[in-house]
Every structure is written in C-alpha cells, then in structure tokens.
Amino acid sequence: MAGRLQCLIRSLFGAWTICGRVTVCDTGNPVGGVRGRAFDVDWLQDDDLGSGITDGGGHFRIDYTTADFQKTIFSPSINVELVGGPDLYFRVETLGGTPLLIEPRSRGRQPDRENAGPCFCVDLCLSEQPPVDTDPLPVFTAVGGYQYLTDINSTPPGTGLTVADNRAFFSTMRLNGILSKKLNGNPMEYRFEIATTDPNGQNPVGWAPVGAGQIARTVIGIWEHYDPAFPGDPNPIKTKVYTVNGTAGPNELVASFTADGFVQVPQESNVFGPTGFFQPNGNMVNLISPSIAAFGAVDQTGVTAGHSSGSGGQPLALDRHFAIRMKVREQGDLGSGADAGICQHIAIDNTGYNNVVHHPSWAGFTDPTGVIGVRLLDILQLQVNGCAEITNALDVLFTAAHPNLGPVSVTMTGPGGPYGFTLPAAGAGERFGTATANFNVAALQPCAYIVTLEVQLLLTTGDGIPNDLFDQIAFCKQ
Image (cartoon, rainbow, N blue to C red; front, side):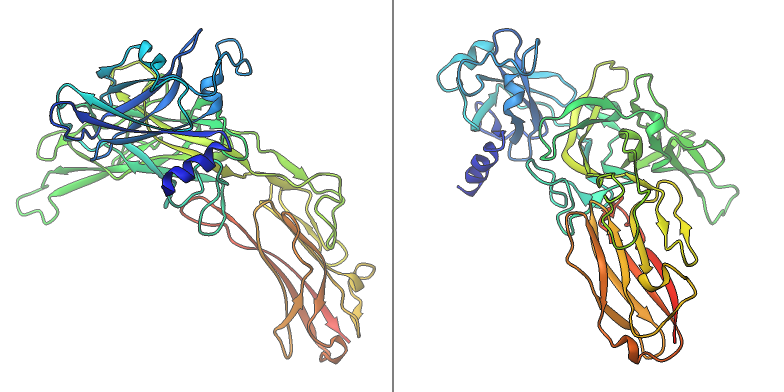
C-alpha cells in the first residue's frame, strides 16, 4: 500500500512506474538476471519506455515519464495519444539482447494493457528457464562512496543532492559498482552516457557518451601473475595496476577504448599462464565533471564585504542537473549497448568565481580566477586607513556565497579570546552583512587581534569534500 501511494505521489510530477515479474510458465519459478523492456503502441512510432533487470524473485521496475509516451518522431511537443496513458507490450531478453519473450504490438491494444495508469503491474512468463549466467552482472551503482539509490536523492522529483547532508557534486567523480569481465559469457565493454535534466531530475535530454578526454586516470583493478624470479622467491606473485587512461609502464597496464568510446574490460584469466589474471575492483571511470557542461564563472567585480554577492550585477550561480547511465555490450558488438545502471538525477556545480577582491585597504589580495566560492571579510574602521587602531567600535563586514552554502562563522583571536560574533540570518545561497560582536570592544586589552571568516561549502566528489574557505584580517586595539 505504501509503495502504491508513493507511486501515485510521484505521478503528480509526471513520473510513472511499471512493476513487473518474470517467471517460467509451467513451474512458476522466478527468473532473475534478465531484462524486461516496455513499449507503448503509437500510431507513428512505438515509444521505448525503458527497461529493468529482474532480481532473484523475478521482479523488475521501470520508471518513466509522461513525456516518454507522448513524444513523436516529429516533435516531443506533439501528443498523438488519444487517451491518458500508454498502451503497453513487453519483451524479455538476456542482458546481451537475446530475445526470450516478444509480445506482439497488438497486445498493447487489449483492455488490460490499453491506457495503462501511472502505477502498472504485469506478470510475464517464459516457456522455459533461460541458461544461468555464472558471471556477476555488470552494474553502475555508486558515485564515489555514495550509492545513488540510497545515498543520493536521485529518484525524481528528488533534489539530486546527497541524502545525509545535502551536498552537490563537483570536480572529478569516481563512477563505480560491479565491473564484470564477461557478458553472456563473452568479453564485455562499457561506457558512460550523460543527459541534462530539469531541476527535479526529470525529462533527460541529449544523452551523450563520455569521451576519453573526459576521463581521468582510473585504476579499474589489479593484474597478477605467478612468476617467481628464482626458486624460493618470497614474493612469487607479481602485480600491476590496470587503468583506464593511464600510462603503460613496468607497473601499469592500460585498457583499450573502442572507436565509439567503449572501454574494453581486460580478459586475462590465468594467473599461472603467460597472460596473468585481471581482477576488477569495481571502479569504472573517474569522470572529470567540469567537462560535461559549460559551468562558466561569475564575475564578482564591485562586490565588497558586507554586501550581497549579486551587488556587482551578476546573479548567484545555480546547480546543474544531470542523469548518468552505464551501457554494456559484448566486445565486437557495434550497437549502442544495454543499460546497466542509471543515476536518474545528480546535482553538479563546478561554477567558478572571478575577481574576488579581499579587504583592499589592508593587506588586500585577489583570489585566483575560478575560485570555488565567495568569502569576503573586512573591518569598516580600517577601510579608509588600514593602519588605524580600534578603540570602542568594531564593525566586521562579511560575505559568503555559494548555491550549496554550509555553516558560516566569524571568530576572533587575541588576549582573553577566543571571541565570537552573531551573524545575520542566511538567505538563498548566501550570508552577508555585519557580524555583531558578542563582547565589549572597548574592554579589549591593547594588543593585536585577528578576525577569521570560515565558510563551509556543501560539495563532494563522492570520496572527499573541499577544504573550508577562510579569510582573515588583523587590527590593533588602542
């Protein structure tokens, strides 16, 4: 009941679901490790609604949107459906694409399949149990240490941020899961594809392969070979790392790319033979995420501490939204491959900030081009004369800005410290204004003091987070 309620709620945002089960007709035994595909009968061109791999109980799930069955070959905006839902028929096939069940198109026009609703369940059966594939199923499951199904709000209309701490992703991201060597008993190859989505993670468009130039060196496993250098060699097993986009050498082997960008999984499988043995570690590619879109930079010319980051005329940047999927196929196959895991929604932000100028009247400096976020600190009493001494007034000005802004603090060190400040409330993606001292400025001892602004950005590569941003300014108390 709860699952159906969730399905109905998702349908309000245009997200529809098919839940299916595949069994053997005579015995009723579940069939795991096969792919169920759903199609919508249309006048001009049938719509491929997607596919799902069955689990050990024979269950599979397909998530799709209204746009998937309303599109036509002429324009996605032209809807030739005369009724509110798709007219469904199905195919069942091996992961390599060998058909096991092909329903006719006419099946979609029968009463139990016509105008299917947003939460549709179907039972499919095969005439016989298909052969069991003893190799593990290849599947993309995680971005770094985040399982996208459970650790990222990746199901539309989710945010695409991490579940635990609302972080967006940036920089180089490790895409990983289960990397098998075989597919249907034959050597396997894989590649990743990326599409843009709306802010709710829906309506992916422009699926494009990740090219070799968008992949950083990735260690995908270890090659080992039993090769004692001499009788009694205490280390008879020799190893090398196997990489994608690495550099071949005495301690490194490199996997090959096909002409259309698929990575060919190494096939060495005899540790005692001359070829050795390759053992995958689950890593697939290190995706250079700044390369997947023109994130650009925001010009902060004219922005000073205490004012909004938009006061120079440039609005704050926003996260970009994407879907990421892995395709697999048998080596030698020139087709587009089969889906093997899709992160439906992930928020990514690689926007830079230019011309970020810090307290120009006192030990000022400008951040390098493309700095990751904005943090500015200044003292009003020093803006005219950076060498002025503080007496009984201290107005600390600050600005912190980023679409994924975390905690912001202003503190001060010096005799009797540390000292704290109260900050104005945060707005959307920024916090700025005057920090109010939680101490009596006039009562401070005559000495030097240092004020520090610390800004945390809610970003992650999947394996690590950026260092906090700091700005500091010193003054002398008279």
